Each structure stands twice: as structure tokens, then as C-alpha cells.
Image (tube, rainbow, N blue to C red):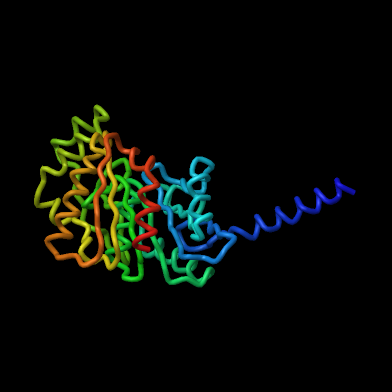
Length: 274
């Protein structure tokens, strides 16, 4: 009898677990929507970086993802390239496709509150989404760029992002950057590309158009890109445009992935601003 009871409980638990997540089917994306057991406080969207695939749906991020669920947030793990139904490469990713997947998820859980958390290139995408769509409620950008860079194709001659089919201007790979790229000195390659000030200005993400609080987090010793310096430039741009929402930049001693070790700061920011 005890064995039957245990089996019964296991079946109930498995059905509950299955109901707790949905596959979101939308053009050029793969996404899984995780739902909390209690009333939904809003939707958190997790965007991975240049590693591709659906990082936030992986076992590596399960503990952090579960923390969001425990706090009453629904969580959308979203792949925008490098997964089954998304583009193969981080190249000319249509921002509207990503937004459409988010919109479908909001409809499913009937919320109008959305916070986007992105890391590295996903942080750039989070900022771009906020700059184009006014219904984003909060943005958290970890190791972000202030400008758009080339897509990760063999030729590096196209933008990472498009909007309504039009490529976003980007900072091109110049002659100064090539030796660093050949030596795999990625940060130095970014710094060399940013010597082209005219291209940099044309490629800036228009963060002043965001209608939401913004949290930036970076590592001072970032080995991939000068994310602390670029986040400082984002802050200065917000100041110059008299940005009326809360914004802050938290810097840590550490490299490109250091901000991912400090989700206590993210939870605190969301508690106050989301």
C-alpha cells in the first residue's frame, strides 16, 4: 500500500512538473517558459551570449533559474541562434523575432511586466530590445557593449542584428584589429576596432530610448571585451540624455563572467525596480 502511495505521489509530481513549463514556438527562436507554483509577479527573459543555444535552459543555470521561480517570477529561457529552430550563426539576428517570442510568452501567463537579463552579446540584445520596445519593464545587462559589433561569421562583414530586415550599423573589423584576432587577443581586437570613432558613433545602441530601469554589471579585468569601459559609456549617454529611470553600473574585480557570480545584486535590483 505504501508503494502504491509513493507511485501515486510520483505521478502527481511528474504531471505538475510537466505543466510547469511550456515550449514557445515562434519564428527563428527556441524558448522554454518556466512557471512558478505561486502567483506570477512578472516575466524574466534570459538571453545567453556568443556561446549560442539555450544557455538558460541548461543544467548549469537551473539553480539560478529556480531562484527566480521561487520568488514568483515566470522565466523564459530563449535561444536566438545556435539552436534547432534559430539561425546557425550570430549574424543578422532579427530583433523583432526575439520580441515576438517574448510577446507570446507574456500572453500565455497574462502579464504586462517583462524584465530582460542578458549576458555578453545577450546583454547587447537586451539593451537593443529596450531601445526599440517601450513595454520592457526592466533591463539587466551583464558584460555589455555600448555599440553593435560584427556578426560571428567567417568574414565579419555583416551586423550581429537587424530590425525590420535592416542591418544595424556596426563597428567593422579594421586593420589594427586583425593581428590581435589572429593571436586570439579578443579584448585588444575590440579596443583596436573602437579606434574608429566615426564607426563607433554610428553603431551606438540608443539606450536613451529605453523606458525602463537599467542595471549594468561588468568585470574590470574583462578579457573578452572592455565591458566596464563600454558600460561607463552607456551610463554617460544616459546622463547626457537626462534619462528619467533608475540606472546603475556595478563593477567587480574579475573577468568577463564575474558578473554571473553576483545574482544577489540582480535580485535586489528587481525587488526595487521591477
